[in-house]
Amino acid sequence: MSISQMNFFERVVFLLKTFGKSYVSGAGYTFLIALVGTFFGLVIGFIIGIIQTIPVKKTDPLVKRIVMKIVNYILLAYVEVFRGTPMLVQAMFIYYGFSTLFKINLDYMFAAFFIVSINTGAYMAETVRGGILSIDEGQTEGAQSIGMTHFQTMVYVILPQALRNIMPQIGNNLIINIKDTCVLFAIGVTELFSRAKSVAGAYYTYFEAFTIVLIVYFIMTFICSRVLRLIESKMDGPESYDLATTDTLAYTSGMANYPFKNRRMK
Image (cartoon, rainbow, N blue to C red; front, side, top):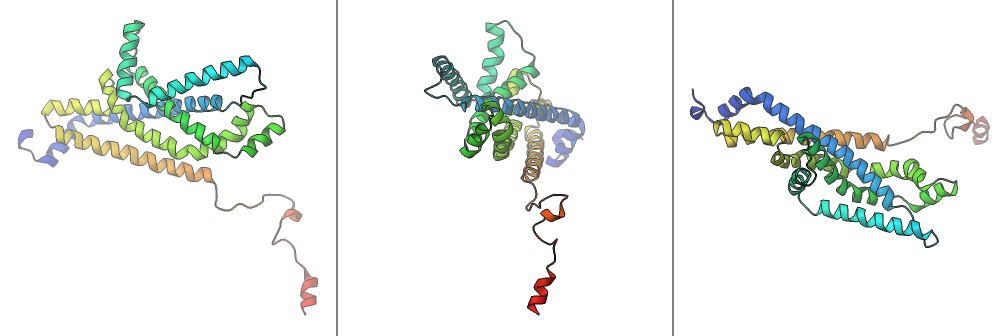
């Protein structure tokens, strides 16, 4: 039976049997690029967030104030440019720009990691900054009062709390990156969407091929969202806490009897 004589479900099964490994390989590349890009984007976001929240006072040296202002302007320009332009345009600009301007032919996978990372970093920078500012100022003042530097305060006091606050947005960015990696086919990355185009073109089964892709994307994003919610719940800890101590006299309840009270009640 030729493929033209098959019904919709038979064609889907045929494509899965024939090109199943290609779909799995493409999904693997898609998830890898999204995961690596989200991780490095988060690192970029934390670095920018820390820099943007460095306190600058009028009493600080003039050189420090000028340097910080220049750095903040550069970081602001980076965030605005990469948040204000499509990833597809960024991919084309960076991949072909390196080749034209610097005569550097980027490996397509390195280009994919780099593009997704810096694009995600622009979004995560604002997310991290908001997460840092959401922490009560008293904690920063308390850390500084015991001699902590700004960097120590960020690493040991503020960022651990900010990380929990921004976990939902980190998950959103990972899911967005899983879907948006499809634009990288324009620079030759053989991710899931690119593999589906090849499959569809082989037998002109576009509807069936992209139905499979639709389901695969949904499965990946659904599993990621469930796992991330589980991580969030683990970070929240138990709903109730009990004081852990080896000194029984330190327990606040349930450890002492008062027989004299019973005698008085009698």
